[in-house]
Length: 80
Image 1 (cartoon, rainbow, N blue to C red):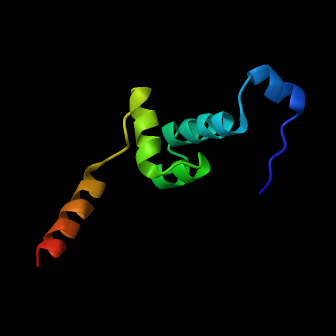
Image 2 (cartoon, helix red, strand yellow):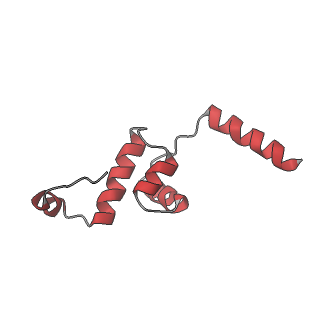
């Protein structure tokens, strides 16, 4: 999908394309519209870089009990 934003609006924001994508990705991540992986792809950043950006802004990563259980199960399987 291609989204077009009028030049005058982009100019008013004072953001480069990369900055705008990052801001949109963070907003969608905060609203839980995108996962961490999806948001990092939208921002065109490696996941670890995106996580650092979130940390710099004191934004916590959505990591619930289900994700923890999945990670623990994965670790058990890796120990075999």
